[in-house]
Length: 240
Image (cartoon, rainbow, N blue to C red):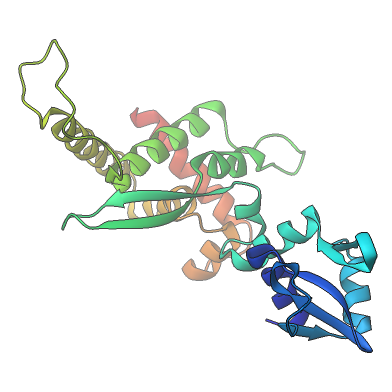
């Protein structure tokens, strides 16, 4: 990370400000100019940050972080870049098989479906039919449920439903049953596809690979991935 990007990160994380320091500029965490600056920037670096809209000159010539600057830091920190900034990636807190907590970063299923719906033929018409998109959405929803595990923070000690004769583990048992059912439906749906088409549907709809990456991995000619995807989703729709 270069100095300007480090400066923006410190301004966001520590509330630092940029102010003149001799012939250059200094970065002061918390805006405390009584201490030595945490980082020194040249006049050119400060001008670049100001020109980009990441910082703005405020009272007494002190530069503050702008909304655009905060967005720039988020883009730089995120593994998913712009997608995380715009909410395309979601963090899921889950409990694993050993009872430990972990966080999963996954692409929002809605984004996957928008990508599929955006595919067009040479005349600009939708490449996938409503039935094919519906089949992809059902598969994606079942797969997400099967992968999500138990949500962190769920209250398993809550009293059971009044219509249920089960004990305090009812909520946990229901969640586990839903996960198993979703896993079974996913496996059954994929089993109806031939091996090549199954790989296509899995990579595009579940693993979020791009069509070009798929074609390279399979050694296929360009644009053949779209045709294979359509064939796979057409078979999947027919099996529903």
